[in-house]
Image 1 (tube, rainbow, N blue to C red):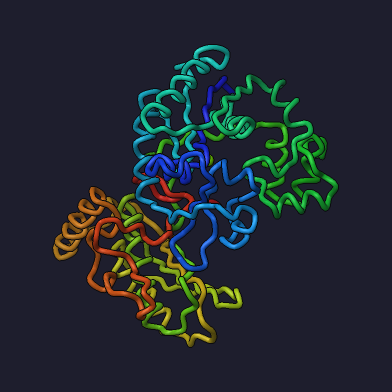
Image 2: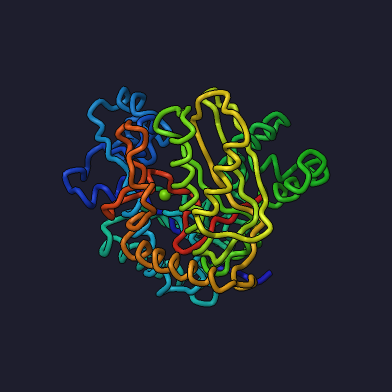
Length: 421
Ligand SMILES: [Mg+2]
């Protein structure tokens, strides 16, 4: 394997920092960014708020108890995605290989542009200065021979840090006593399973025979064996070269539990429009529509229907999702609803009838307007109506719409979420 130089750039307290820039009164003060719904949790806390123990995922009440003078700011997703898009433009001056990993993180392959021992450090320093000058934001950068180690490195000196892991000897020292859960890709469940086997650190995990891990975890076992050693040969995939998505979906927790099917249908239309737009951005269309429902008691289930032809129009997706909803009786009030489309194909491989071309051109025109002025600047009439008189307008027509906090963690500019199984 050739020696690669991978950079991981992670913005510090991204949403909160952006808000502090927009409203200077928030600078230096404890700020928590929340979703727009009633039962919202904290999305990002500023470092001033973190000092009091305020964390992502806490409810407003919990946070307020820790820090009574905490300032809550409602998330403005447009601001964050716009900033992300502009940041990516900046990164592209340094390398064409930029992978937008999430709204506030990218991987960049600078192999052949800068070496790990010299050039890369000055490049990273320059990038940090430029981000500070142009955006007033700080980031933490990790550099290493692969993505796994680069991500680990960026996390080691947050905020405003720069950490280089030069080679596997250095990596070995860091990994030896590192809790397995600190590795990106080892989630709480896997961490617990490993803990049950008496494995707490990457050093211990590296000491387990690969066959034992394979017997216990299947294919994942093999991956774990490599991860524990800091080995990772996954490439940096530029946004526009992502492998085929398996499905595209959105879901939302409703502002309040909903029993009324008509209200649910409006939420389904909004979600379907978002899914349609993401499909079209990725130049995909799909045949299978899945509707996911979670009752107020958290019981969750999905139903799907498959068409003979591929669709990417939100209205058609909605039509199918609603027909699924009408095919069974709701037993309880609904807390969360989700719509996704799978069985995808690339649009340019599909035949197109003349009437479909007219429709496609109309949708394209709408997409262009929304791309330029923000999501839901132009939306179908029904989305503009308030939902069920509870004062919660579903999507809005004034150009500042954010899709109501439904931003996907895997959001990418012009990209489609890659779903891994
Ligand atoms: Mg971050």
